Image (cartoon, rainbow, N blue to C red; front, side, top):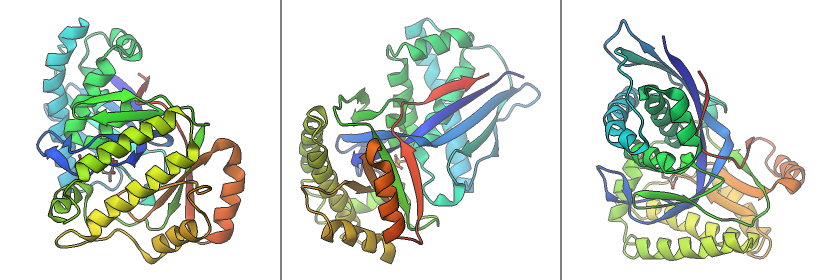
Length: 340
Ligand code: DP6
């Protein structure tokens, strides 16, 4: 049996992908920018079972039956997709027959309520594409050379789950329409603390949120505002202006959650502790000294601080929120093939 293992990180967006211009292709209504999270990864082991005709998912933490269908559909999408991509890199498809056996796990606690489709779909895309290559060593080399194969696979992955396309690069990635590209940053190295308010599954999936927010009265002009903010964020990253990055991320995160709160029907991911944490950052800091605070479509709060101040912040969070679980992740690079 041919076997390989890939690792893909998740990412935290400071400018959010929320709202789509094309739902079937997961094309975003606006550009987004994220930091790749080395500590919050999905690891996928995939092998070909020559005795079987069908693909199967042997393990994947917390996946629903509709999640399994989405995964299996994506495997087929990647198989079809590489037929178009490989010729550009002079890669040939393997003639092996058989179904794929997928085993997937996360490098962070499965119960943390932050399981993200970004890392799962990036890992799945890379694993299946690599296994489709006749010459794996050649595939690996071209993938590492960063001459377009990563971008092509990111496009394919996006069709499975939008935010996964940003998990092919890092530490900072810009995604606009079909394209992902690196963003230059002169910020110091950061770590992301996740203040885990809730570990339970969210009651509105992010795919549903993308649809629901179209009903919000705040949706008008959102795409222009987010695009302008993405431009400002790029400049702030280039100039290494941490507090400006923090201000932009703060505005963006509140705007996305305001969209949720004003949809019809409205919904919220916040829990009382989410608000306690946000109040803490609102009341005890100003825009001149607040760390980078952001939330995904969930109740948990991400705080990005310089690595050199990691201990100071950790102790402060422990003291202020003694009952809250805290995860930590370094900034990282994109999805990679680990071994055979
Ligand atoms: C709030 O990528 O999960 O995390 O394309 O429907 O799978 P689908 O959506 P998904 O949306 C993520 C939304 C977000 C913001 C972001 O990561 O940019």
